[in-house]
Length: 29
Image 1 (cartoon, helix red, strand yellow):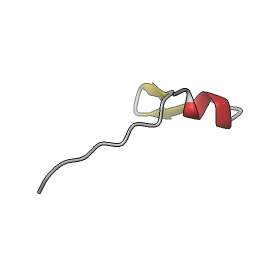
Image 2 (cartoon, helix red, strand yellow):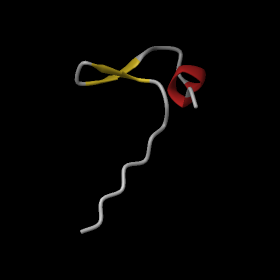
Image 3 (cartoon, rainbow, N blue to C red):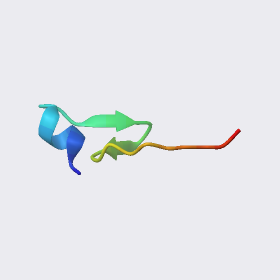
């Protein structure tokens, strides 16, 4: 929780969304 905001001194964005938590996305192929 709050991985990005705790570990980086600047906001990290993917597209227009600020990344806050480290979320692993899994998709079965």
